[in-house]
Length: 436
Figure 1 (cartoon, rainbow, N blue to C red):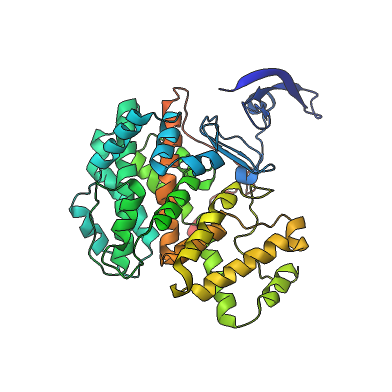
Figure 2 (figure 1 turned 60 degrees about the vertical axis):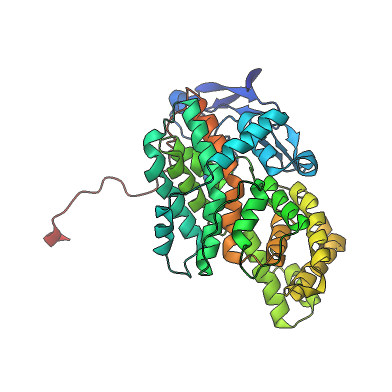
């Protein structure tokens, strides 16, 4: 929990000479935070921070990011340790319950998730209403929202056990929905879950069974499991903030999650790895040497940008990229020259080598980020670009729900209600239509 320090920050209104002392709050990691809540009450001013880039919108104990040092931790555990030693089930338990499970707790949690791995057959009719070329994210938004119609009456957002049940249900059902989005787009029959498999293997099995995708290997399963772990949470990003804001109205968690998926769909948020593949495809299809595109990327007057390099939050190397890089290389080595995406994947590896050795990129810290490698992994596994963000949503579900649960557990929680700097007309008078 945060604590109030002995420090204060004083704001003086030069027009009136009135002052207000703002308490400084201290977290367990990261910069101290100025509590500005009394600025409006004492001085009559709002604060202005477009994009909330300098605003702590909530107090949280779940995930911490230090962008300058390239650190990411879930519940205090460095992401590197979780990636090297954990699996997605264990990571979900950690995020939801605050500590790593013992063997019995993990077995019980996994059994609880498997118990809810089913969907009402009527849900298949929902997918039938979509054209085959409909974007899978549109299907996901609708399908998750539709779950509220089945479970809304038995959700009490003020009851901890009821919230836990909703969380288990959503985590269990999201892989089914994600796989059905994919199968519908290919006009393939829907696969049902197999409770004998672990979470990640079952998801891949529901995706690929009876399709033309490559046979599953332990490397493919491990690659997907890492992607799910690394995307499980990322602090107060746009989609997580959307879930919190929606959930603050005490709406159904299914509705709040549907809102979060809508936010994630935006190309500035969840679509970065799609942009990587589009860029690589453009390079390959052009037939031009890679040096041509490197030169364009360095030219300030050229609008071409290398996608999947650098990160808004991480001013150093994205720690998730360092983790996923090796499994990406392992997967490409395993697939060898037989992979139909080999020209594109070869270009990606050449681009990575240049970026890690060229002084221009090193000085600007434009290192490959997690989206660069996840996009390549998905492409190597023949997962279509339209499904990239759906898998992101699947991974992030546990993070969204954990933040929602944390917020709803706080008795002081209030509905979100940001204010604004109004710059519109003032004092206009209504005139009859014939006089306009």
